[in-house]
Amino acid sequence: MGDQDVPELSELDDETPQSEETKEPGAEPETIEVPNVGTAQDLEAVYDIPVQVSAVLGKSTMEVNQLLKLGRGAVVELDRKVGEAIDIYVNNRLVARGEVVVLEDRLGVTMTEIYKSDRT
Image (cartoon, rainbow, N blue to C red; front, side, top):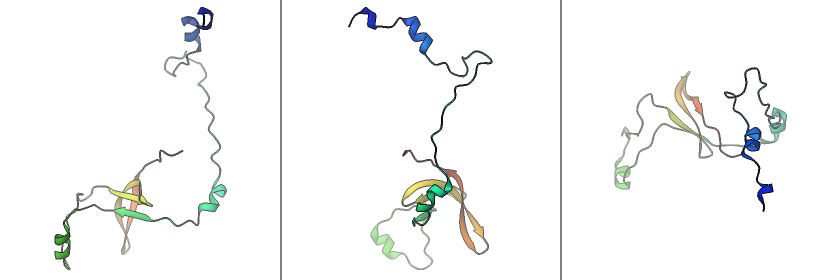
């Protein structure tokens, strides 16, 4: 490997992409192509797959002998405070946080934060 194979520093500077802030005024922004993610019809095959959705209000740890002493009307203290967001799991995977809501005579959950998966 000789000196001919190593590019000059000025050549490298010309090839370095510039961020939007350092580009000249009026320069066209760089176009990024987004891969085709498909349509709702492409997902029809998975619509009927059942998933388990859990809304966790809080958690508590206790010994078995304490658990066995619990009876009707016992109160178990949870690790969350009133008004604090709850965790929403799909198939035992945390996917969102939300709040408890009352719909007529039933409880429901509204999602306030949705976590994106790091899987590609």
